[in-house]
Amino acid sequence: MMVFIYAVLIFLVLRFSVTLFNFLSNPKLGYYGKHFTDKVSIIVLTGPLGTDTKQLLDSIEQQDYAAVEVLVQDNESEDELAAQADGRYLLFLNAATTVHHGLINSLIYRTKVFNLAVLGLLPTLKPSGFLEHCVYPLNYFILLNLLPLRLIRLSNLPSFAAGNTDCLFFDAVVYKAHRWHRQLGKAARSGTDIIKLVKQQQQKAEVLLGNKFVYSNPGVNDTGGLATHLLANFGNSGFVTLIYLALVIAGPVFVLVNFDPTLAALPVGLIFLSRIMIAFLTAQKPVFNVLLHPLQMLLLFVLLLKGIWMRMLGSIKRKK
Image (cartoon, rainbow, N blue to C red; front, side, top):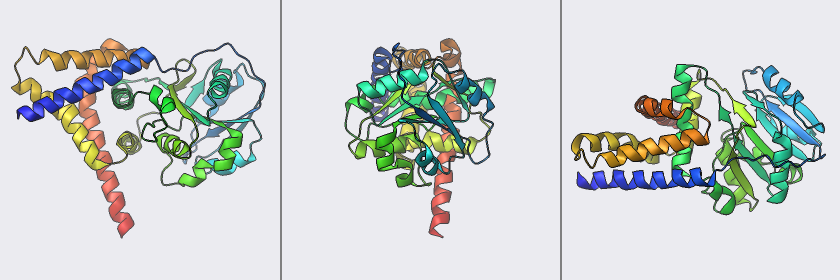
């Protein structure tokens, strides 16, 4: 019993340390005040259901960058569409996103300065209802608790990888030489997979928070897709995910019930401070997220178990 309690507390301290590092290093895309004229091909991915792109296209039209071409396609054919683009840079955007002034100039500047093959942005989320407030913060809670984002660029290790496909900015010459979407195929096309593959091939990658440049409102209708996305944070490993659930959700509950009330203030305080820091980093409401933490952890538990179950069923069907 005490061994498990110590494991929970040690893991909690480690997660808090990672969150503190992210908070202090502030891994957000900044506004650099530089202006460029390189042509950028913006590839809008609508998804298999043909997501409405009007809001995104309107926001692109209002961008303070003139040298762009816009190509719209479903995300089953990113590689083919990229082959048609003739821009110096490729910007892949999910149809659920919107962009704001300064994005393209800032992306180009950062890519040039650090000689990046790919720069991924994690959009600022815009929840519009109670359920979205409960669900949206979960992925960033996991990510900013477990991975120091700055290490994605600073370390050559492919294990330091994260991201999604909402906003990916490529050097077009490097992208067309490697054709990463084609290499991955349709089975594995998460942002994390792409960033990991780029680093495996000795190219430079970086992932930052979108700050005020990119926003997303993907909706919560597809709980299966959300569960799959959350599971990707653990390399799609059911075993690793179950250990995480035991230490992060079951563990603190066990500690609060069986531990000295005075000492239990430690995990409560660390969880409280972690949620506050993550909320500020991702432009969420700090107090609201602290109050919703128990419900969010319950939803996280259910969604990750659903993701594991869906992956097991998928494996069984493939074997048949």
